[in-house]
Image (cartoon, rainbow, N blue to C red; front, side, top):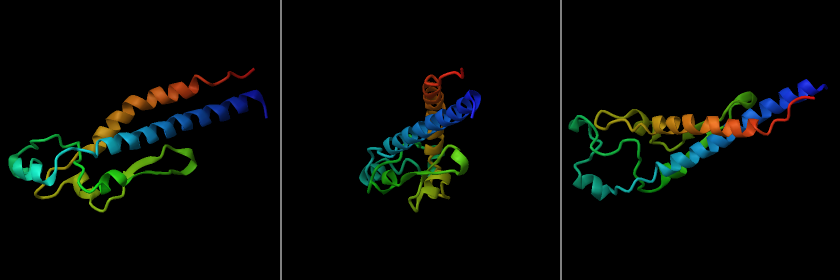
Length: 137
């Protein structure tokens, strides 16, 4: 195997490492965004701020309030074939209702918040890994 082939393999590995690190940071970010402070009592007192009857949410919709902690603990990295970046997913049974909303509740765009976070950190992480590349001789 020549130097150029080694360089190419190292390049691919380093990009994958940057993607993996970004995904792990994304899960941590998602868990943080799943620790909102509003209790069930707070939501009642505020007339259920995510109810569609208000026309628009009256609290930050991309923050999921922590009640039982199940949603926060349900964030996972789903591996993808052939080294592609893993997908961040929430496996809580009610996650689709938060993601898409219901007839009576606005969608909770935590997915967009995570994507915006990844858009910021991914280039930094990949660049950091690529800075460790040694050019072929």
